[in-house]
Length: 475
Ligand code: FCB
Image (cartoon, rainbow, N blue to C red; front, side, top):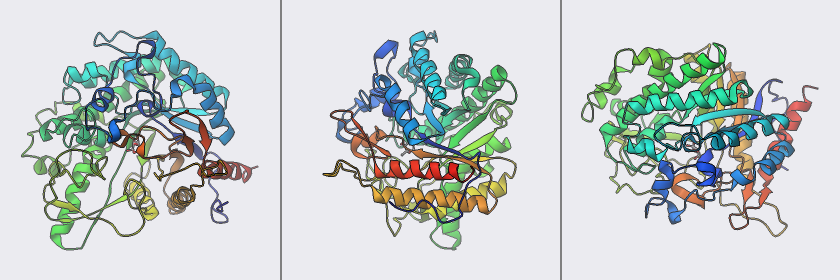
């Protein structure tokens, strides 16, 4: 088996080792116990929206297999599990009335995790907006933020202090821009102004919900948000290329970091997007609400971006080879003079370049900028075309190498002073990879979608051994 980490690269005893999933990607059971459709059910049912027409109807059927899945997590030795809650299970209709059966599912899951010695880290929103909320305007509508805070209150009261870490949102960048500008994610809308309103209302939702968590559980309640911050590099030091980088930094990163951590929108974001919006959706007091103090900042990292001044190729909005993230096929809002360049070197099945140094840079730069804010890697991992080998195992050595190099990147960032408190591997198991359906496998556990059988991949065995060795180092 591939070596664990270089000798002596030991993490502190309280560093948290976990794995992550999201409700719509694994649960299935889309109509069980009163759940109503989310925007992802509607979107996935739209012809051409997802690769192969795949939907989350069955997914990994986790809803019906939670006990076995928790047992598997325990076998792997996970210390923590990052999961998300499906809003449409908790509040299936616009009346906002709570569905006890929906909440009961998560209530049991949290208890099962705790009984297995696994700390639950709960994300309140991982992209599956109830369809009823979209019908009322979705994230471009201000009221969605208040509705989200109301939903949050019910969940927080039900699960309370059994949750180790509360995360308001996962990657609002994707929810806003891929959902409402490029339209490659649900709800599939292509309207730059609507996407910017969505950005603000997601920020507002974060602030309102964060305050609810603290109001219900007390001022020390563990609170976070997870961002997919872009590591952006300029192709040259020419002013035009540096300007291209600054634009992507602004619209990709600063538009969230600014309000959430510094109580302001950077002026250049407003200026760069003036053609699409006048930002009149920002009301007095919003910025104070959004800047709720965080316990820890969640960072998702997969790869880097290389940009230069230029004209991006214009796409037709359907998921392309890179349709899921910083799409080369659909220009970014406010960045229509920026070209994303293909990067040399190895890449994953997503076409994302493999660059662990980007994670070192991201974590150390965040630490320099926010020295008192602890960090947590809430997602990191890689998709490859895995297969069950004749010996019944899944020999995913490229994923093992990816994980090893990126976990070691976290170690290096810590050695350079970054206060990183944990690492969550994306993903516990293969799952519905959004617009790519079941075609891209990120799991450390293989899922046979015909039988729903789980097989721990070599990477899962490797990760289990790593956690065990890290624990042993402190005994
Ligand atoms: C992130 C998402 C997660 C998964 C990974 C591969 O953007 O948060 O759900 O799709 O990418």
